[in-house]
Length: 197
Image 1 (cartoon, rainbow, N blue to C red):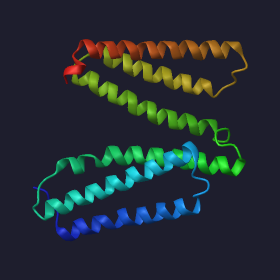
Image 2: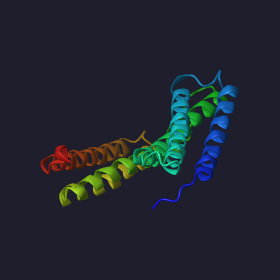
Image 3: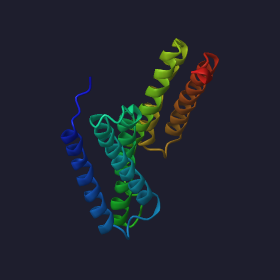
């Protein structure tokens, strides 16, 4: 049995409101700079974070008031907040670093971009591995795991000296193999009935 009281639910709104006030303050201060892709990503991200927290607090309040157990209001919290923080963080990084140097895309350190890519790739591959495991398709699972490491290697190589033809060929070979494994895994999932899940 869940232990939510009305006071607990009301207190849960406090960090949500504090976060909103902080982001509105930052948005106001940077309003002339929050244009373009970075600004849109930041605004969408912070809206997702706020909505995730607000809906979770609302879930607790409705449960405490015995209105109902609207589980979807709780279940949305982690996915929306994770995506929101990723978008807001990347967006603000683009805005701040771009405005400091006068070039929106050329100033973010390569390793920071590699880190962002690893997070996104890891989330994608983890979801694909989950589906492969759920469908009990070992071939797809192995393909996704191997493709993850190949694409990590590709990301690492892309941060190296691409003036050398050998590095280009090596990186592209690894990339092609990694993408082939993702396609193979996707076809395996299809054959295992992914559309019927």
